Image (cartoon, rainbow, N blue to C red; front, side, top):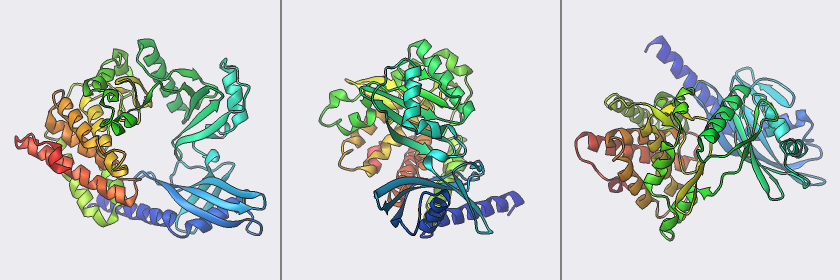
Length: 426
């Protein structure tokens, strides 16, 4: 074993231990210590502390973060909170951050608004501050602003929804450089007339306030495709939005695709499924080898994260597309594979809701394979599904490993000249 390989193995073992600690039974004591130190919790007064793992964020080589849904009872009634524990190196110190050290590792903990790596989240979580932002942007906000967390990736980004009467906007909180990049992308799309949310305000360097997307998520159209096929955009319609991206997109910074980061996602998947580590690593190796056999593609304007939760529809058309953070030069096959990979895992999330998804997926695949080589598309789709294993529940993670393996098998069939339908593997 080489020195670098041994070091990588040691790092992986260390992060596996971090995962076990942060997800284990000791998490309640850790959260209690953090909340007590922040003055939010008094063991002598507060009772029935419950700490449930909500999300696991594991980036191999960049630490582990776990989000907890926290509940306890006070004399005034029940309290719900959200606490993060992280070993990520970018999780620095600051107000509201508790530092726990057992002599082996250091864990930093905070309540969601106090994320040390995205300090803009504190202001964005304050309804009065957000109301002032909206008034400064020209909106007559008189009613109290209601805030709801939409997504949160500790130390990386947060999205909140703000409602004030009939007004609804979304607030993205990022590190300052990434917020600037996102603003540039929205301005570029607006200038080109591409259907996407508008940038409404930049009240702080780390904040982008965006309009709500028109229409309904593509996921809803997929769920109802059997009963209301007229509401499901044709595959060509999905490709059509990508064709609208302006040439200036090619001047933006290129982001690596899921397939480009196959080693990273293989390591994360192996950590999420330790009992199937050998199978995961074998699949990642086979996909990496297969990627060396695909034909080179000309780069084109790409979305970079093009899947059913980010595409909004109305009456069978694409009305707007959100989350353009990764907009830039890329491969068309990566955008199409991202769509296929995410749609492929829907039935295992909710079998009854997405009962018609296999037929939708097959129509998408058949159309997309007229636009990019089937062999390439299926390999990249398998890589996308592999990237979705980390952070999933154990049942979902195992299902995704199976699905990724099936796509890899389908790619091997095309390599041998048999254009096998994915229904064979359903």
